[in-house]
Length: 198
Image 1 (cartoon, rainbow, N blue to C red):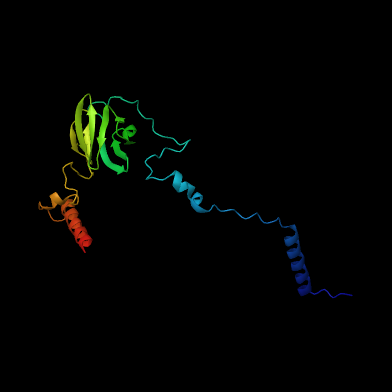
Image 2: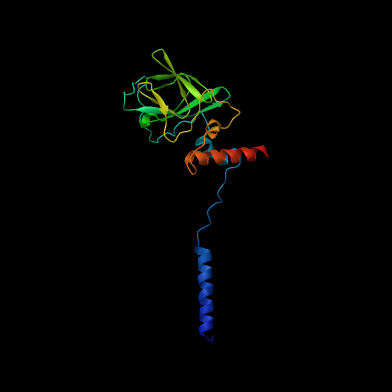
């Protein structure tokens, strides 16, 4: 006759539970095959922000673009040339506008509002409207009537700027109020020049 003690009952119960868990457990899922090489970075490839041929993914909502050649309403909207990118044979101009449909990246011969891009350089774009040529520098705002003004909080660049000088070097010669944004920018530029010359 077998003597059942509490310790022996617990050991037997634990053994039976462990045996049941191992026998009745579903098989482990197959190992996940991870992509190797460049295909492992498919997301980077499809969402690469530096690709000049990048297009929206299918099924994503985008702002409706105005019809080509649509006139910009006088006094109501404006566009700002926020930057340009020249890479090999491609030249792109980055625009932002008061109308979200004017937030575009365009090539030469494309249109924005009733302006056609004649050429793109690293510091400006040449626009054409009805045979009239307009040069819009990076960081400048163009209103619908053709008036060019400085855009708020945009870098200032002029077509005749010396490419050897850092942006804002002309401004550094003029004294500014201590603690102002111009003074801080001037000191930061001086510090950067010292670091680069070391």
